[in-house]
Image 1: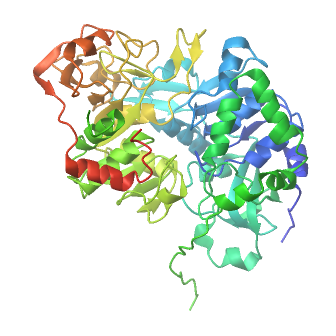
Image 2 (image 1 turned 120 degrees about the vertical axis):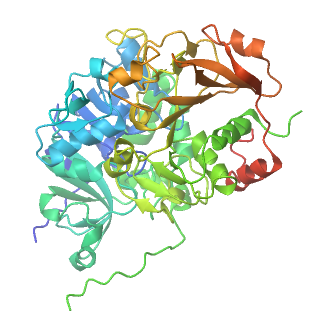
Image 3 (image 1 turned 90 degrees about the vertical axis):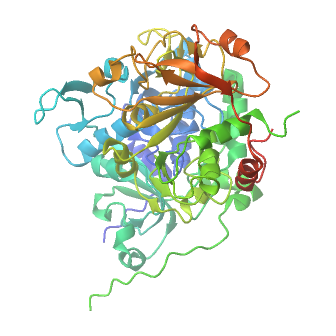
Amino acid sequence: MPDKLVSLSDAIAKHVVDGASVVTGANLEADIPFAATYEIIRQGIKGLNLIAPISDASADMLIGAGCCAEVTGAWVGNVSGGLGHNYRRAFEKNEPHGIMVHDYSNFSLGMALMAGAYGMPYAPTRSILGSDILKSNPNFIQTENPFHAGEKVVLVAPIIPDVAILPVQRADTAGNHHHWGSTGVTREAALAAEKIILLADEIVEPQVILSDPSRVMVPGYLVTAVCHVPAGVHPAPMTGRWRRDSNFFNDYHARSRTRDGFLEWLDDWVLNVPDHAAYLKKLGGALDDLKVKRSAPAAETNFAAA
Amino acid sequence: MANYSIQELMIVAAAREIRDGEVIFVGMRLPITAYGVARLTHAPNAVGLFECGIARYAPADGMLYTMSDPPNQENAAWTSGLVPVMSQLQRGRVDAGFIGGAEIDRYGNINTSYIGDFGNPEVKLPGSGGAADIAAMSKRLLAIMNHEKRRLVERVDYVTSPGYLNGGTGRTEAGIAGGPAAVITDRAILRPHGDDHELHLASVHPEHTAEEVREHTGWNLKDMPGMAETPPPSREELDALHAIDKDGFWRS
């Protein structure tokens, strides 16, 4: 099998180019690829279109760091704190510059990625009817159900992201992987995207993945690059691995209240931290406290052929 | 001095909106605890859905800062994706759903997107999340709001999540069924009343008055027939709440 294991900095440098559309959080509040967020900021990549139903503080950081031109999302903010301060400054003061937001709801963004994933020309939905999202986002068209005269439906244009950055619990070096727990729009994003960068919490032997193909999000042949990034989701949670670091989110929200405060936070946690290994070292004992320690394994599953 | 906080009263009021055996779109924050209280008291057969892709029977064992946190995953009825779970709404299988909001108007339309004109807004709010979907497609919409005059307005600037739109047959004309059933605030409970579905004052929380509620409402709020005081949380409801909220997150 091809070896796709590369460093996170190489994967970002090669596959996340200026102006790319990037899925930066497909699993709502869990599995947000913060390690990739930080690396994008370190590399100074510009003009990104961030695609995520909810990406918690990740989008706010990328906006504040000047990496983001557009957000394609349903909810942009800090889950713990509410409105993101950088998001607000970008809108109200064009600081560091203005951004464009493409309004979706969670379900309609899921439908758009689903249409992209399955090669559908559009996805029809009963949602968005009655919402002004129909007016503020031209990627929705209200029409009549051709199978049922007089019934209103909304057509959602497909989204095909350039890159999806997807954290998973474990992967082999060819990109075959297991993901468990709720998945948000991860599968749709993975199948829709032109490229997939996998952030593996753990690298395992191929047989571990082959032993349980039901837990595979998409097969490894669709994956472009595999990065071994333990706790790459920090401060977001990952089922069976990491709890949410609420203090970290709260600290970010408080410190980013002013532009200067945000820039200090950015120096502290991103720009003066050379890579993910240094970030984990900086977290120190706090990271150990966030580790899921109890074991609650699933029942054994038999895949024997005979 | 009451032996409960206003947040606890709101949680209990929200729990009472959940009927036994119903499928509930739970969402985030306060309704997570409300779902748990309902399950432990009058609605032991309710099912909870979470848009991250989770269905649950028993409430999570452990504090949930977000619906995706590990305690909501362990012993879930289903950990799936957003599209399969939210499609339960579109399939017509969700009895009631909770949402919050920055602004609500007299017909229950909710704005979480833009203050001012959306082409040139004064403030850009975080957006819909799942709210527009829950509002359009659940059978009963339950909204939870802080009761301030700037939040309960005559007409929202932008309809993120449709209520009764312009009232009357507005929802039917837009092609959607259901609609807001209750708005639970920190002062009162409002419900739609009459053919035009305008929100009326259904009950006032203990230690608050109808006059005060009206002062903090941006339209001429009328009383619903039989308007009364919101019953305070019972001992059983508070015990259930404290069993779920072990850290006292909602008590302060």
